[in-house]
Length: 433
Image (cartoon, rainbow, N blue to C red; front, side):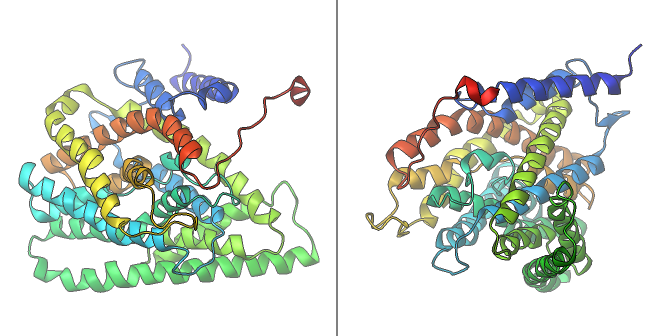
């Protein structure tokens, strides 16, 4: 009998071959790669061939999911930083400040109100739910983010920078919810939360992202002057930057995701030769796409019919309010009076503001926050409730945003983007020879 592991390898290899060779057609369809991976994951899960299992004896292994999603998000936020070449000035990042400083807290607290009033949670538990579901995913949102360092589109820039900086404001409220799970008396830990989890961790993340990245770039330049590294190994500097920045930041209780995003910004600006960070970005994007396959396959494989039905009404309530009221409303409020980069317009077109609201894609980041909460006190009936609301919301987001992202972005490029991208010319036979 063939080992299940060997069968898994065969199916994943076949899946990669199919989506790679068919990517030219898939990219033109109202269909995302993540949706394909999700369907295959369901087929390989408990209701299909049972080839992928994160449960043993009915117990879900949250630690495996936490570590896998952690690395995927790290790679993704570093890539977000590498894509951005805007000057580090408040005016140039105005849309980011609005999305992180207004849209994010509005979304968290609006979801917390839903959890408190309609889902039977106390305020701490409801804020944890809001912190898990509010952030826009930096991994699955890649189709609506900046395409390269030359892309300066305001919508894509806003969604890219938002995805990279979600951790700056979402994680403090994840910690808030975790503290509340352990001690319902907020007076016992609230001041410490403000000082450590809100102020120190954010400041440490920014400072460590700058210091570690600059140190690595300085070492790289010094050594490369004496003897160049093997060309086939050079791109691994990007991985070392991610791992060193994250680990050292976590050692000083800073937010590692935030530090890694900042490190990406620093690396992008630290080389006179623009090809250096561009090569790292291309390397990182390939890794990210490969890791995305594994994570979405796992998501599909952990879905179970009975608990999804049990929490179906609660999930539906959260999804309808989040996708059609909370996120769009918060995006509309956040962009009031926002002036676009294009000088021909005084304010954002209503269609652009609506797209900011619609593309609040949920995915790998929410999975990580959920798994992290499981490892730090979330359990029992509350854990089941938050978990299945989260899983269902991500699945529906993968479907809805996966189907709508291509036609909506094509419409945006044709009608609203100040710098529409030219369509690529058709390939010739010579290109394949």
